[in-house]
Image 1 (cartoon, rainbow, N blue to C red):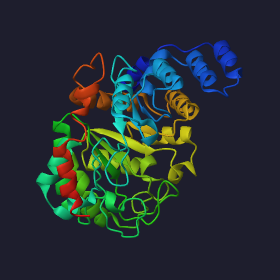
Image 2 (cartoon, rainbow, N blue to C red):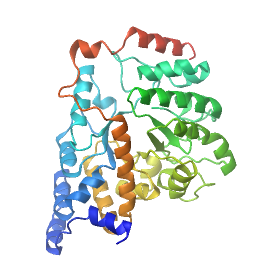
Image 3 (cartoon, rainbow, N blue to C red):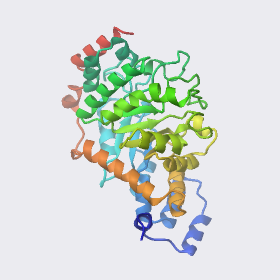
Image 4 (cartoon, rainbow, N blue to C red):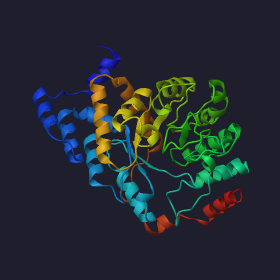
Length: 393
């Protein structure tokens, strides 16, 4: 039996009968619970729990909602991502992060936060409030970058277009060499402190003039320029062992005339994975952003992203029905061999390697609280680093 066939046999452990499928599919799936029940009845348990590891989910509120707990129970879960809507006080953040880390007992989920500093900062006072990453580029000081990382995602776009409405001062610098130098230092330091860094947004979002949250940006550079400039920071981050890289929802006609980078096998697999030799975890940006969602429904884009070579997909709004529908679409794609079982196996192996490397410590019985927590937040030494960075605003 071939490796692919072996993999498929492992994932598809039980095929429900035709009668079971018909009864389940006849039930309306207008709610998260109904859709979940339909998937549970019609799809093999082992396959469900493998596919669930490919989802990084957002949610609403300041505690883990019941719908997300249910998805994690039935499917497993690759991780969660926190936004401002999930953050109140430090004790609450510690509690929700601790709770999220225990959603899947066999392999801890990623607990991530959309946090860069400047405009993209979800952790406010009494957490240290960091200036934008551009201040590090203006300083040119790699030691300052390391001190910042030690106290705190690595933004690897290059600010080559002053009209860019979405990157701007989120980028470290305007020169590829500076972004590469400082970005690699941040990656190394973050990960030495046990935090998985995420380099974004491949193949480069710095030289665009539209916001991918709203529409699909166009990157109009030839391949030679992309390899010399836009790819340079990612090469450096890969050399520094960056745990994850996030794709960009941009159209790069010189590389793929039809599909955004996130959904392009040419860009994700052939260039990032094979040409640049990246062995870590590749994640999509949020599939609900208009750059992709205006053209592709989320379940379809989830399948295309995994086909392209992404190892996980972000679905961030907190719409658990959409998240469950994406998982259902991925399961169907594996069953129908549109996504090879070997592709899922490869993605899961990369997640597991990264988690074993960076999430090796056991989850504590209780989250940090009280003085033990407050003593490490908003410390004078961290504020001094932020103030030094702010000199370069």
